[in-house]
Length: 400
Ligand code: AMP
Image 1 (cartoon, rainbow, N blue to C red):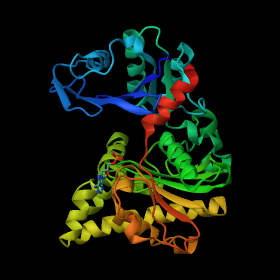
Image 2: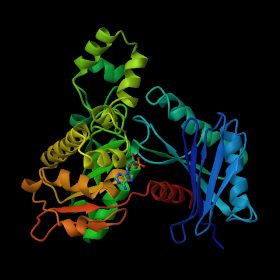
Image 3: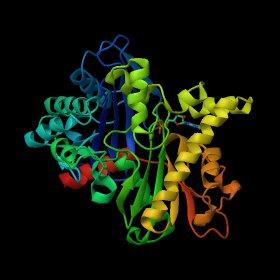
């Protein structure tokens, strides 16, 4: 029988998320999460499809031990789903930054690893962890092909006019300072599903996808390719996020640093971890908490949501302009999939683009739905993302 099982791994600096996907029917056989790698209280949480969650609490000093535990869990007599590692055809790894080097997914080689390492200058928190995950798999699954799938690759189709910053050109030439964009696998998946749901070739569609999770970005997809996106050199640019500021006057950064006597690290930390709706609301970075606070009359919480919705709407409008048209605006990720109020508030700005919301259809969480009202000339949709499936599909495609 043909081996069709793909292991998908997403390694962070102290965490590792995984799924084993059977590509015969594109379903997850098991999924799990290793947390606090190299920190006190490390643990693995594993769940086979249709089974109970299993938690293993033990010392997990590094990613190699973590990957080893994942392998054991996948083969476990009670809660495992395979008998032997040889049942895994290949492993697909999420890699955050591929710079200008990678326009699509690739099989990992020594040269690929060296290039991912080079790109770490642009993603110092993520790429080294991604690489550690790849190397741990190489050791523990010798002979099993490893594939790297980049968050940035889908956006490499952006034209120069969209990705260049208007700063001295030498900075682009020397350091490749430019817009790259992230969440590429999510935007790609959602756009493809949009075309399938609308029953139209993606080549004929102008789509704006809104990935609204804890991190958030909007993407303009014209004819199936990314032509612009809101995140930049790093994931800090663009929308207001859970704890990230998104766009602001760059001069304000220097101003604040001077007034508050902050180092670049402290400033970076403030903009990435202490800003966004967390800072505006003073309540939380989680939209459920903010919505609860709004319901109790908290005005700052409402203000935070107003700023958030307004920014998303502005991006959708600017991308409709960039593409000279709009067939569908699509919401995905934690907030986009689960927040009918968020979708409605954003769409309330988009009437001039032909979008009208059917509130009954919009009353949905975590399910695919076209919630545009009768008479809309553009579609408003919700589509749960599936980044792991895109990684698994790319991996299988390269290992056939
Ligand atoms: P993600 O990064 O895609 O996992 O999204 C995480 C975010 O989704 C959380 O911070 C929550 O704010 C948001 N979220 C998850 N579930 C809900 C819900 N039921 N209603 C509103 N927001 C939600």
